[in-house]
Length: 311
Ligand code: NDP
Image (cartoon, rainbow, N blue to C red; front, side):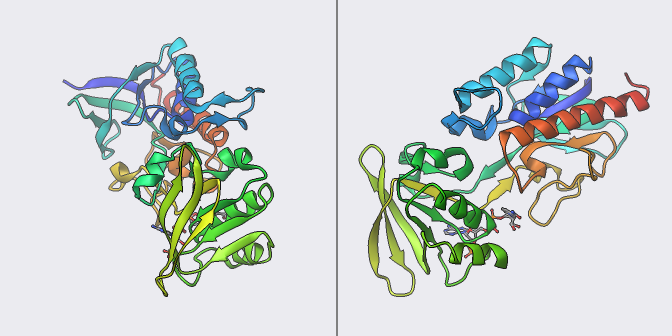
């Protein structure tokens, strides 16, 4: 038999846990499914120094444990599990967890996040958090005064390179083709930044170092020429993928899979289904903005349930 809930939250990053704090305090008795990566992207971050309220910074995993405890304190039913199927065809939204549980929810808050794309080379994993990062705003500060490399050629790579150029003497931008995909204005900005060195037609072969990153081995795709660039930081900026495949039959998305919300709200095209966090945000992607939209989603859900006479 299906379990009936007023509010189902899918995902356990800053957006999901913040939605849970608000929803549980509003007596929506939320059930939260953590997803496979409990805590989300912050679990693979070290120090977080830009989240307000932590004057001395905090480790990403510790921060997510604090978020979890706060959500649990107000009674959120937190379950380690993955929602693997949904059906939004009726007024009651159906969801199935991977253990077979069928849930009928009056409202659903989606906070499934996004995942950084990686190159897929072994050394990337070896040096994860030891010089390899997918977020310059999060980790760039630790490379102040050191040379770094950024791989990618879209707006994210251009933004990350510009950000790092303010902190680092040299930023090597590794572009695999002879042109960039980034918007013209971003391209101009980086072309006009003296300490950004663009390596065209260049692919990464390997990240090298002992305990930490010391350099990167690259190959020129046109000439086959190989070389080494000494860097302390290696930033992968080849795009993010929102974790929204589950909703593709039901919810409006842009052409890259980010959920579309109605202006100034967390509302999706389906009544009672709300979207928060990186699953709906390809621009800011910060823990604090995810927490903000998580809050919006819970407030929207509360209003919706009140209007429908459910709470
Ligand atoms: P994109 O998909 O736009 O770009 C990814 C880039 O990474 C491409 O240039 C691609 O190269 C390169 N790439 C992919 N795989 C590899 C690989 N294995 N090795 C080397 N390079 C690789 O992703 P972004 O995250 O940059 O942007 C996503 C969306 O978000 C875009 O629509 C963008 O405009 C938007 N955005 C907007 C911002 C803003 O307005 N301020 C800021 C950031 C993003 P190739 O070109 O050869 O395929």
